[in-house]
Image (cartoon, rainbow, N blue to C red; front, side):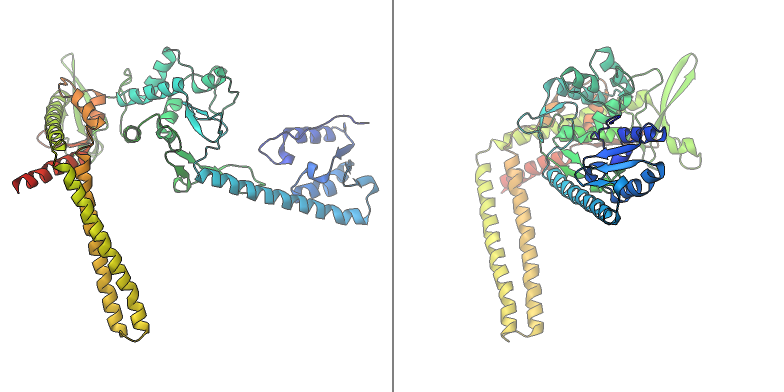
Length: 497
């Protein structure tokens, strides 16, 4: 009689490692089972080596009768023909499994390269599109939480402080939220029955590129269809496709957060926020970071920044000691001066962009580009005809190579000219494109009377501290500022003519 049935559920393991098969073996060892019946050999397993091992060695050794119904195999009535045909059938089943695995891998790889999202669940902040499960759409409630997380990070809060605030505000953790909207999932990140926001949960969101509209997939693989152990791939092998869905976080803001995560942004044991200049200060002489040092004296605490190289080795560098109060005042003054200068250039660009003669200049640039393009086409035709002249004996070998090199140099010169004119055209057009978002944000800080983390991370790239309390501040948006300066310079030259 049939004692018990065992099912092959869809586990990401081989058939012989699945829970019910292991339970079957346990019952066999306890002499509860003396016969195993399967529909056919492929249902037993498609790994021909393992299947053969069980059918030909383990089951006979344990005295277990094995029956494959549709294959007409019964080990109790085994003959020479069965002994020969069973290994071949197992081999065919294994080959079928290998073929299916190759096709599925290829199909999934194509989907990844096309930017189709193939994950089981959407990242927090997104949902799978009901009309296309391989496309992500924004979940506005969760997306607002993601925006808040990035905003808090840019304002100087540590990952743990962000997690504590989210928990205090009663914001459901990603797993809890997904379950609350009807998505049933289990996660290896879940550590308790009611998971809360944690340092790692916040960090995963801050480092996830999906929020910029980019899908990054193919981070892990398996050696082959028989071995299911996941192997991490090198980052240069990941498949990254941009602009596959709507972004929640602007790309420049995401990049800034990645920079901040790499810097020394520790907080005091009793604090929740990173110091405004944390991770921004470097020694101008040795390049090491400047670290914060608190010195208690006379019942008060004095804070200084010193070179970490000197702190490790007194012979490595001098202290470059700079009091935090004086440093903050100096940086604030420098930043305000920089903001005034940038806004002044921006206002000049606004005036220039309204000048009626700027549009005709762009048209003239396009005409010059077309002329250069025609010259390049003509040069290419001549260069191609050289080989025909050489074959026909019109040119000698030396003449052919000399003229070919001349035309090549001419083409390279035309290419450089086209790039220069295109750059000039882009400059003219950009002056008419209106105010940029970063300029408007900068304008909000023009009357700042103190430094905060948001202002520092938005405008400063790094600060080099030299001996004698001298500072060199490197600002962000250098490329954009240089472009505005170029517009003003270009217009000034035109006016002078």
